[in-house]
Amino acid sequence: MAINYNLAKVFALADGDTDFVLKIARIFVAEIPKDLKELELAIKEKDHANAFLFAHKIKPSLELFGMLIAHDDIILIESWCHLKGKRKEIAATFESIKLQINKAIKEIKKDYPI
Image (cartoon, rainbow, N blue to C red; front, side, top):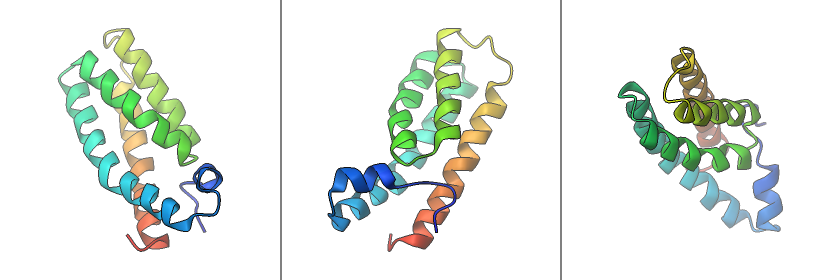
């Protein structure tokens, strides 16, 4: 049973195609950690343009996987980018997203043959 993610939107898009669901889950597990590392680096370097790019790239996947808190947090990071790093709590926000994503990936790997 999924606790850290929800594939309801993926199943709705799949229209009964379980191979499609598995493919989307595999892409999430393979690509999101790479993007997360790039986001982390951009935040550390206060590279607001790249931080926004990767936050914006990750955001739809969080919504698609029903990770609503992480989705809200990534919106905060996008805002931080627009404010040019004037928000001190951004490091904690990023760590929260990272933890949520890592929990979801671990659970997806447990739930699906990935």
